[in-house]
Image 1 (cartoon, rainbow over the protein chains, first blue to last red):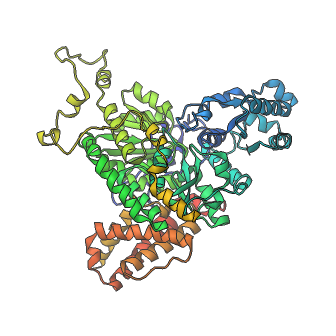
Image 2: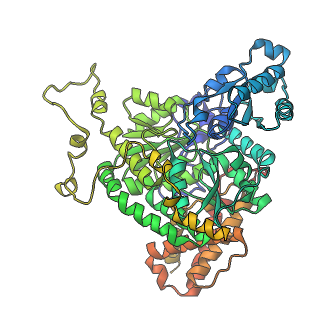
Image 3: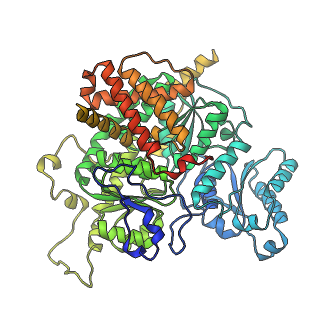
Length: 524
Length: 116
């Protein structure tokens, strides 16, 4: 096994099995790191807890819901607002968060009364919101508070409200991934099948494992609607609680982030016979294939092809402008779980960068199988890295940019490696054809930032040039380009809007003729 | 001849590994079904046999097979020159190799976990 042992982790020998480099001629049967195991004591992990995985990642993007945590206020605060999963109802779920604010006295005397009081107060404070998700935390789980019983009491007293209970305290699993699993199964067992939806199209999907980061879901939903497909529910970005109770009536589950929500698709397949189609919403070619597959499933492939042709013609010249300037740049894909494999191949093929490392904080070995396969030979694959290992990897690999979370991102900046936020994005959405160009633009801006170039100089060590004046990104990026590329008429920088989501939200039924036509035919 | 076949199988495997997701479902039985259903249909499409999905679950396999077969024809033009018996042998080799890489030879310890 081609394990990679970090110098900084020789004192933690268990860590050796968590990093590999797949060499020439080697396969997945030769190179795969350990994964989804308890973090090794002594290794300062970047992982989150199972409560965070359930609430912050999956539960909270639901838009028309009071999300309340039963526990200390810190649990809620640390899972609030740091991930930009916006919604089309004025971001209710981002603006407000709720906690019962447990204290020591509640640990001693119990906090069920406190919980009930908080639930009633929350519904009273927001009388238009009739749905709630309620999260167990370590503190309330350890003292044995029966949050299901309290939720039922409230639902008995307030018949127009519905409460979803998620028993995923922080210790329930080795990482946030345990929480993903728990909340998926809980939602399936407790809520799916409890609402009958209005079906308005012959083509009905659930869009699963999509969290609407800076509008990703709305971009993809637009494509589906242009194809005449009814998106019955989205699990959970920009998703509505009651729509998600009706998931059992879809014809197809289109699965984006298999890491966080394949469990739900698998259950829907077993109980309701709804197939699971895994897709990639990132990158021109993978997205085109994904739309093509959905179209094929429903026998409306021509509609998918219309979109693919139009979007490719509009945005490919802009993607290629960045590709010419990003060629050969080394990047590390260091996200949480799924993006390492969503991006690993296509970012190399379509943006010209070289992926020198993939890591996952909480992914399973299955995610590494996908990531290592797609990244190709020579990429350093790390499971659950600690901070020192990440630093060592950056010193060794010398990446031009890393895509990761804000914690490793901050120490990357300290050693002068630019980073982009892989979880919440910089100037997203990054999904969709236009979104992929926006991602390329963010990478370009990060790598060629003149400010960053200045930061590369160490004033205590380097000679500071005094003969150089003002520079721009363009001066830096075009320095070694041929005239042919630099002046190419068929390439151009991004020309889209600062925020592309309002235009999507302003669309009317007239903008979706297939959807309207199918609805009319169904009515007749 | 054997080397050529092996090389071609590796090319087709490489495409699957870099472009597809269906071979990486999370359990052994899941992967066996995915590999079998999708690669059988891919072979049938490449051999221009008619494929009639039995139900919507099967239709989902067919969808992945159609896109894979199209990609093979486009990216590996030599496949269009093979006769049906050669394609059958080739795809049998692809199936065996994929089963090895994703199931029997896989180092993924989660494949045999009884719970999703």
